[in-house]
Length: 144
Image 1 (cartoon, rainbow, N blue to C red):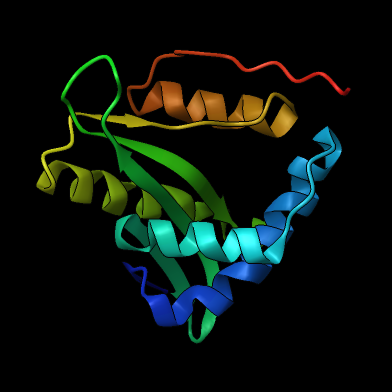
Image 2: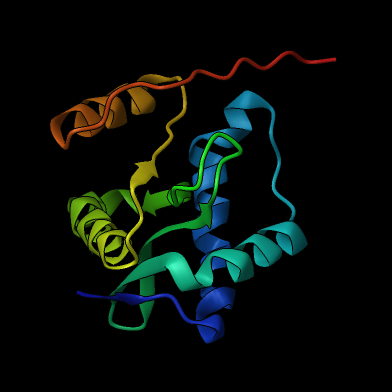
């Protein structure tokens, strides 16, 4: 298993991972994926992402963007995806550790991580608690 920074030439490999993430989580909430939008977001996040590989198979990804909130001048890294194929979940914290170190190296002051509100999200929340996060905001969705 190899973890390395994301590269533009790897973006085609991200699409199946995102599709699997959608099938496991977002589809239940009524959100659907669009390959062109996923590709555009991957391009936007590629410089602040890491990918886990088993041989030539992409097995996990963590990615997001650096943002400067309207409330101040600090740099914050906002996670958009942290997903590892189910059979490789033990790799997740290794991916996260690489991303956290990169954020420290970039003098980012905060990392914002998210999770879905479901049974999987409950497990992720316990991981966040263990690595020093505290809850910040909850989003509510209403079908119109």
